[in-house]
Structure formats: C-alpha cells, structure tokens
Length: 201
Image (cartoon, rainbow, N blue to C red; front, side):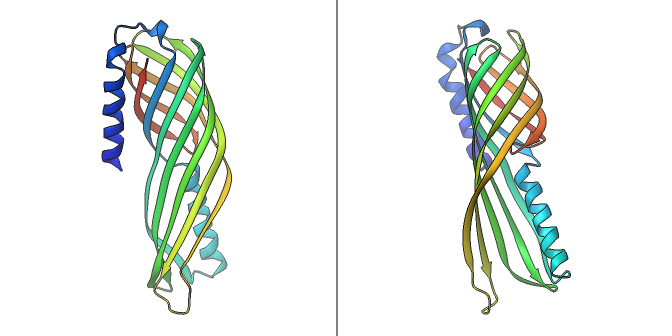
C-alpha cells in the first residue's frame, strides 16, 4: 500500500509537469494524496474492542492490531482563489487477533471506505507557501470479516455504512507553484495528523 502511495504521488507530479509555467494565481485544480494517523475508524475500533472485553468479563480480547491508513486521495476545484470545492476518498484497514481466554481463536479484520464532499479555505495563498482549513462530511462503508479456528463458531462477514467527517483546522503547504508537500492538524477520518503531496494545475 505504501508503494501505491508513492506511485500515485509520482504520477501526479508527472501529470502537472506541463503546467509548470502557470503561476499560482492561475491554478484552479488540486489533486493530493496523503497518509494520516488516528482516524475516527481507529478510535471506533478501540472503543468497540474495549466494550467487548468488558461485557465478556475479559473472556474475549483483541491483540496485535495492525492498522493501515488512513490513506487519502482528494480533489478540489477552486471557484475562487480562496475557496475550493471537491471531495475526499479515504481507505483504512485494521487486522487483529481475537483471543478466547489466553488462546488465539481467530482473526478479525475491518476495512473502511469513505467518500466525503469537501470544502477548502485558503486563507494564505502565495507562490511557494500556503495555509488553509478544510471541512468534509460523508459516509463510510465498513466491512467486517471474522475468521475463527473454533469449529463451534461460524466465520462471518458483514458490512454497514455510517456518517463520517474530517475537520482540518490548520493546513500548511510549501513547494513550487504546482507541486507542494503539506501537513494538516485536525480530527476525523483522515486523521489527527496527516502529511502528503499536492499538485496544482
């Protein structure tokens, strides 16, 4: 998945290379990829696992959680130099061992696919540097699969959809007029902290 992230970033830079002569004033389109930490889906998993452990008197426990993501791709079209309208797609996956007592009984995996319309407010926009805020809200499709070693328990798959969001209070970007690295602080499905690369054309 990290290789896919790097390949997408390189592809975007190549695609906007022909637009390098444009100044920052002329760019209306933005595409970006990013990687974050501590998404809302991760927090949901933590609370769900804790509640299962408590309600089963610690009989059922989850360990060795491995969360991939959140990995995001986003697009914005600037109706005004300071205002962009677009959308965000986010992917995340959590795989963890399920213990019955102290014995591993199976593997639980959650995958998250999120699509959110979004707005971006560029409140500082210069040729090589920018600061902004971003708001997004939409739906997450969550899929769950349980593979168990217990012959008395059936392996199962399920899916559900729920509301999700991203509020990035502070974003900072720097680089050339067309290719920039960026970092954001906020809360939501993209994470409390995320870094990525953005191309403008």
